[in-house]
Length: 299
Image (cartoon, rainbow, N blue to C red; front, top):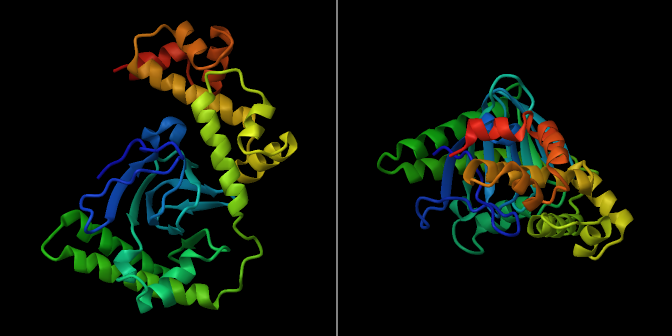
């Protein structure tokens, strides 16, 4: 399955497409050059995610850290972690993601697998991401197992579900052993910071056409303006206004593609004070003028 655009709900949670509810597992390809600016935007999901980079190099960012993942490498993303992917190479970036519910490897509710091996990882506040590099023998084995799982899911031969479950269970066993013996991380996951940033991002999503002030955005999470600035910097490595402008540009790009509205109307609809300012910001963000973007992408 190829996904060129994320489906997000009002809380920025990804609506992960699943072929069958009785086997909650999805494999999809993503080509980052097909996303705006080569970026898969901020999102999260309750499912576990493993991904491998087939080509190019990307940066994986979370609320607390950023990681560089190159071709031949992979990563684990824990549940409920806000994250984005962005291109870091001139070579087009292609990745394969495997997203699935923990029940596939934990079995029944309160099983020994869930209590002893799965929940401790999912509830580990120090573990957002784990990278897999082929220079490590155990990581080579993990990457090989992920490839087998992805291939089996794609071919859907008779009994492929057993292959997928067995591969992912083996991956989990290797990863669990490494996590258990590793020293604890100094940085811990801030659930409060994560909730605050989600509230403010949602507020911007709902009110971006309006004239927004820093105090408006901060009030969405019931925090001070200073804390709002710190929250955006620590979690997204940007400012509230830069995020707002980028969101307005993405909204404008959608209208340029899918509507017959004039560029001036789109500028005002998306919260810009005028068409010339809109053109300047749009060019900085998207790399071309609004009219050029419309010519290339209008449906």
